[in-house]
Length: 526
Image (cartoon, rainbow, N blue to C red; front, side, top):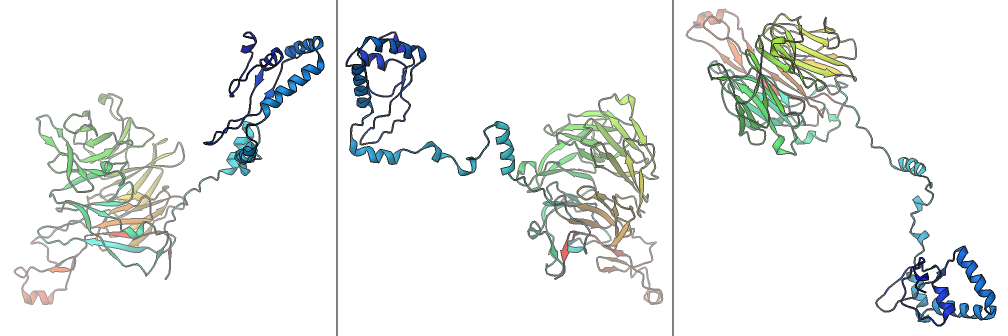
């Protein structure tokens, strides 16, 4: 009996008394109980018994049955089966039947017809899961342009305040505006514009843009740049870098305007140098700062004076980098040349190549990445009416040339819409030039300002354009004209006698210094 007890016997019942040798032999021949025990606080039902025998065991039982009485064996087997299968309480039989759930009832109706093979199940699962709808592309310049908000700065002959460009944050929630002699201002996007797919032409009131953050430090702001992964939901990522005259590079908090840290560049005599241009790497881990005779590379996580120097021959006026080539850097200089450096090479090797075409110093460089493998560089210069497009795969000559009016030394910004289908640029005459890069590339001019439009920026998430206006006006004793600054007429009475002032014509110089937000998306008439 001990030898047969190891032949795959599994049971969840209590011990059964063995009445005779035949019942013991029968119980120890591969008997398995496959029913489920259902336990309640009041009673316990008996599971059903199922008996399975192998061929060898069946043959052995057949030989034993020939030696014994057939009738006695059947009687004993029947008696044993009836004893095991009967329940203790016949009254609970109906209650137990209510608790038992057939396994077919647990299947979901939607999965009842699922194919048995793994490939079939995967195919049907793909059909059941609906793909997410792709966001619709933003439509630009399909209707009239609507002014959303405006902010103006007052000026005087002693302190002229004018904007020096405008920069949207990467998440499109804030607008950074440097102002001459008035530090830097951060203005938030009006809250009602976040969920506005279509603008009504006459129902919305004009917003008065206020500064959420103001860094009231004087001096000339050379350049500023947002952290490329800035997200308003993550306060630690909300900051921008700025470089100003006679100061190191500062990191400013976009929530309260506090100074987080500084990155200092020193010259040969250990004096602090001011960076001329700034740029972040695509991952935001490195800071590229252009100086008069070198490029300094700082680690974003390590402020201070520790950096890598890359000597160059000319002052770096602007910096651009593409995400496809993190080890190369494209730089412009005040001599009108564009140089492409490989930072892995020795500085003695010099730039990989040099591009010309502008007659003035380079003020802005921007990459516009198109289809895979395509990489276009756009460049603008001071006192140069040309915007040049370069194909970096074949840079022997400009791919295209765009005309605008630039008569001053200040930076006149240009920007692209999402998808790089449109390019926009400011103008010293106050107009905004628009080019359809997928069309005939002819400029469309919009007279939006009465003074120089030096700043232009497009919101990365909404069809909203921001423009900044203003420039420095020379006011001296040799100027015989009256000057109007934001509506105020300045007259030098000591210089101009009253009788002569009546005879000469009334000449004025219009001076506008403002930042304006415009809706350039779909709109409907009221």
